[in-house]
Image 1 (cartoon, rainbow, N blue to C red):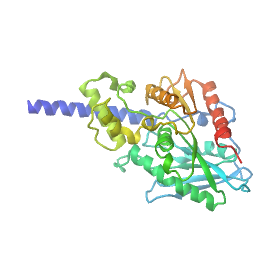
Image 2: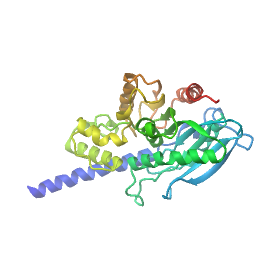
Image 3: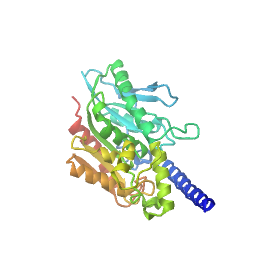
Length: 328
């Protein structure tokens, strides 16, 4: 009987790692957003040159090899204070680089903001201890360095917005909701696309975690635990489980004090659950947080089939900035 139990346990673990591999492969391979394909004829791009601004790259914020950021400053350095927009890169927590968002950061900088892209230690065989939680802590620790660098360059920061795509959106939401009280400057808004914000197996239908079998529960427990950097021991759907997963679940930090939030999700997302975004939407509504939620009805994780909706979402970014962090 003991041998049989061991065999069954090994089987469950094997299937769990198959799920994890599928998640990483899908997440890492689905990070091409509209800003890169540009179906909008250059509307969301700028001809970057010294008349627009300057970029300073690979500035260290910690001891880790990946602990670097790029900062973009507008040509106009005459103002007494500036708003900062941080945009965090996608890549399934295992790949990606701040340089991939250069066009987005340049475009936002051209509107008069200091902007920054921040790298974080990617989960890999070389970095087995890296996970969503440690990455979120790196982002938290990086912000004072970004603000100090901007000040050194002659751009004092007195407020900020944070954003990202996919994995970067997950990390941005965590900073905006979980870490707002310790932010060195007020967080005026958060925006992002297709970022996972909660970890309930019944939502993760794209991986079969909603089946509720021993195998699917084991797979969900190991995958979510790997992302959280801890062993998850509590039963799903309990307050104890919420406490265990809270460090990486932006949903569980939403409150009436959360900053205005702009989101975009794909209804047919097979990488992270569309259903989870509905929980987040309800939490924003219940807490009366100013928000806009754009649903791409025909798209998956790349929001690839709803150019009109994605264009509306991107234009809304500027509207949010004008409303909640206007140029002074």
